[in-house]
Length: 118
Image (cartoon, rainbow, N blue to C red):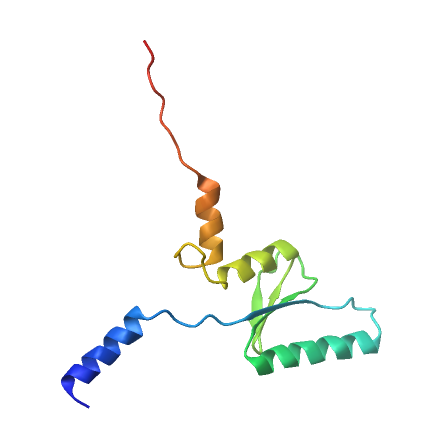
């Protein structure tokens, strides 16, 4: 490989957009759920991991506990936390880092300073 090819390859690695990993969000069944529900939940998690998805599970947690990742699955305490994580993993429509950045920038709006009137 020539020097020009190596430099071109490095430039492509930096400049070309990276492919986005699909996101799969699931809700963990209640602790008193039937075995069929738990088996179906486990099948969904394994299928999503096999596809290469980023797996987010909404699971009951103590308020002090934060988000945790175990065996390729990220567990969140609530729907809001899971939705924010999902938005941070989705591509931007406006060219920002993620969809979450789009939403936050849109929420900030424009600030116009006070104007003196005579």
